[in-house]
Image (cartoon, rainbow, N blue to C red; front, side, top):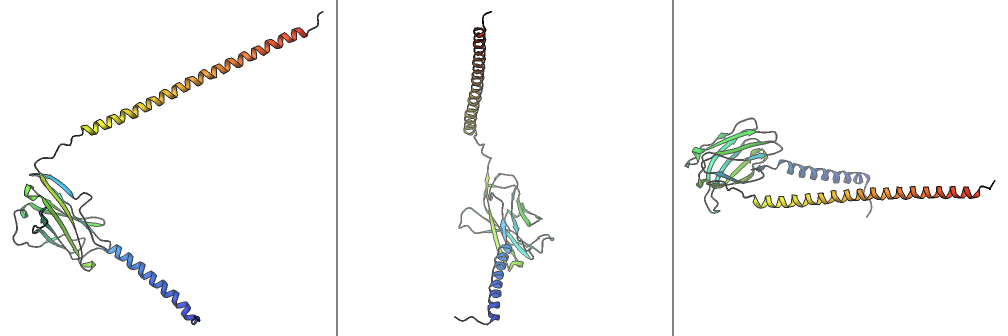
Length: 237
């Protein structure tokens, strides 16, 4: 194929570089602006009957947020159970406080919940506190967040709450036995190693002493033999 004019040869590499830059920028923006909601490393929470429990929820986005809509929803562990709206609020920006939205048909849980928001360095905390928990409070608590600044991007995370009469005492007897046995074996190995090192050191010392004795004896024998030979070699007067 014949080569095109010089301006085409110069233009096509520029176009390819531009497309590469645009593609990388799009990938970076897509990764950066994604809204993320988190409830911590352990979403499984146990609470004792009659106590207060905090249900964590944090959302973050690297481009910031504005006109956020969020709400907490309760469901039982039965996946087919209908949801119950616990808290509904809006958030203008990071410097503002959430404004609650009136919820119709409130249940007995609404009198025992309180939102504890706080803005942090890179995220915003929408932790919900449930007071005087009861056995019927066990279930799934879902935190939903929608950010208008990200074209109404949505995300959610779930906390699994189990209310118990009392916390089970963990029997650590087997663990202690295993740790004791392992510790005893390690201690025995260290003792054997020390004894071995000590015996080797003593044996080496004894061998060094024997060598010294042999060398001294050999020197003495050579000296005596030399003296005798000198005495024989002297002429008689």
